[in-house]
Length: 136
Length: 136
Length: 136
Image (cartoon, rainbow over all chains, first blue to last red):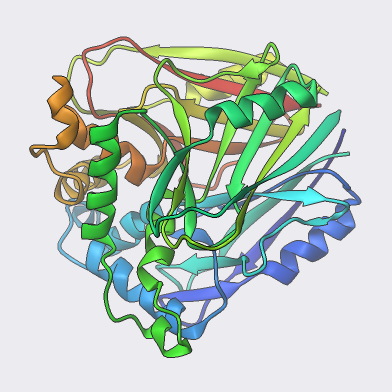
């Protein structure tokens, strides 16, 4: 069994952003030389998530507006700690913070429109995503 | 390490459907001859998801009605592309589009009521699910 | 490839609880002797989930109140079976019921504030979580 690990760093200029990381993950898969296996992509900071969906600008606006509706900026108990990002913790929970991508024949085995996105809900800070591959 | 990959195809007669795929996944696990490992089940089309829950007809109606409440059919920005399925992208996000099932002693190691479902939110099209197993 | 499996049992005194299981999972990782791999933590009962977020009491109250808002106690069709826990099935769906944790250098490779929680939505019953590790 082979394994390979890299970390992607983000420091988005905006508080909320959707960043397409598909080609970065593909590059890491190639470097791993794994032909058949799994690639875990997981946001290591608790106010960010990973989303697999369509690269379409309208949809990306839709999903952010929808997340704001379901997990709005509000006065959360978490804010008694001095933080102001309670909504970002809940948004991460909704989209989920990780994905396991299949690797087949040395490449990400994604559907025709599947793209991998880093979703930042509390940006302007340095944050990490782990990309860890196991396989053969 | 062994790996084994199959694709399940769906073309549901209805726009929305919940299809129990547990026995199909079990068959693939047997064919893989993996005794200890992980089985990834992931919907490759971005308007479908995978759900692990109870095979109970009332609950299956409940979850679809609940998803409609949280991610309703509406006039999304995504529809400026000509699509009409914005809600289906959001419903997939809510239920999540994949699951990793443990394999122990050559069988799916599920809880007493855990069943695996394909959730279609934009049917009447040919769509795929990847079932990929790694282990030994 | 190595694999290692343990089951954690829960029987929470309250109907709803958030139990930090990070150190229990770390102990299992050590016992597995896996240095590089994946650790699946998955709730085997369909009214419980796994959540990776912050060990902060205000936030833990926030997330439970928010889940109650999005997936409230109500009169579900599922209750025609005699059950009364329809909301718990939906809450599990929202937080998702599993996580794959990366193992690097023999330890859980978590972000600075990432902690692993068992989320019980229908307690006072004996329930299991599978912790399954594969790697080398």
